[in-house]
Image (cartoon, rainbow, N blue to C red; front, side):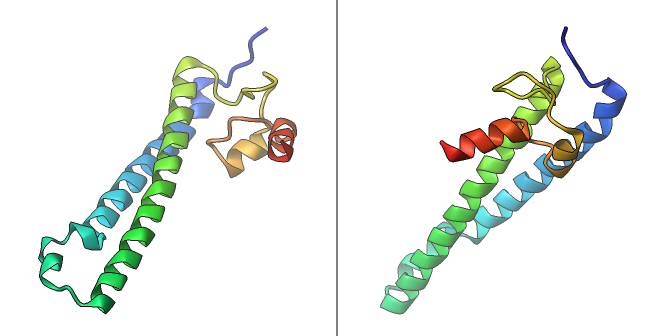
Length: 121
């Protein structure tokens, strides 16, 4: 027997995930514009302190964008699971993920028991 959430229950989740996806994309675009390496006029200033600040700024932006990319992947995977009718089902054991867990993290792919096993491995 296959367990599924009714679509009326998932509609608010879909709206939330789509808003979150838009927010993440906008934040990523903003960060890309703030990257010191995106400024073409930077090549005119070769001062060591400026170069160090640019390197640090670029490293910080790159790390933030990497985290945003990971979040975008989780959000898009959750939307795909909703579309194919597998949202809320643990990828490892096939049992329902608790609604409390999904409320805390709508992108959760594993039930708490399986997540604990994964974190120990």
